[in-house]
Image 1: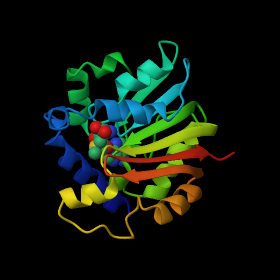
Image 2: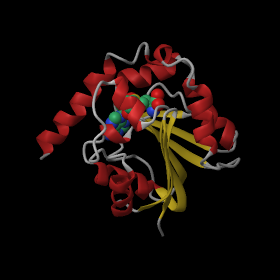
Image 3: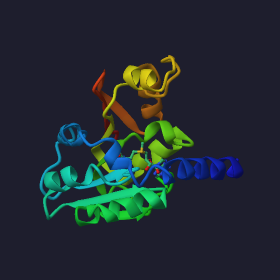
Image 4: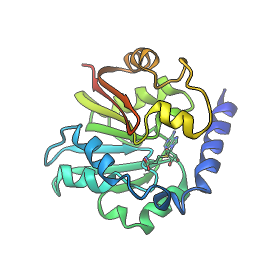
Length: 203
Ligand SMILES: C[S@@+](CC[C@H](N)C(=O)[O-])C[C@H]1O[C@@H](n2cnc3c(N)ncnc32)[C@H](O)[C@@H]1O
């Protein structure tokens, strides 16, 4: 079991390591979509938020704007090359960057108001466990946003594959998965230009 998990982690790191350097250049127009998704979290000045699987930190400027200087913004990613690219892009000015696996975060239980995760969920080795770890670090009533700037059908078409009902992000899969991990799905949008699922941390 442990070996499988290490294999999964290595696979993710290898996949993203070679994509890190030109990640932002490949998706130059996504900024407004990220800002809109961050706005859905309803953060306030002073809020504490984690960008889980932050990659090059594309969401960090919008998260910092939302929480202000008195707030806390953390960005955690497994792939060192992604963190390096985030630093090169100056994203460490907007948040503290951690090289960490979301399955085991160096963050106190209940210490955050929200988690933002863009393009993350389909890469998680053990989704229920990892979403449970995200629930651990968020206070009851806090929020989770699972976002992608492309909807499921458009993404499947881009990759030349069929959309299957067992896709983790399909609502009938996602709702019970989140519930088992301590989250209640409150809103679900899956359209061509946006996938956004919002969930609240159960008490
Ligand atoms: C599709 S990229 C998205 C990056 C960024 N959120 C964005 O929207 O540009 C997925 C990111 O999740 C990270 N990742 C995948 N599994 C992870 C895990 N278990 N813990 C931390 N980061 C992870 C990868 O290293 C990669 O940077």
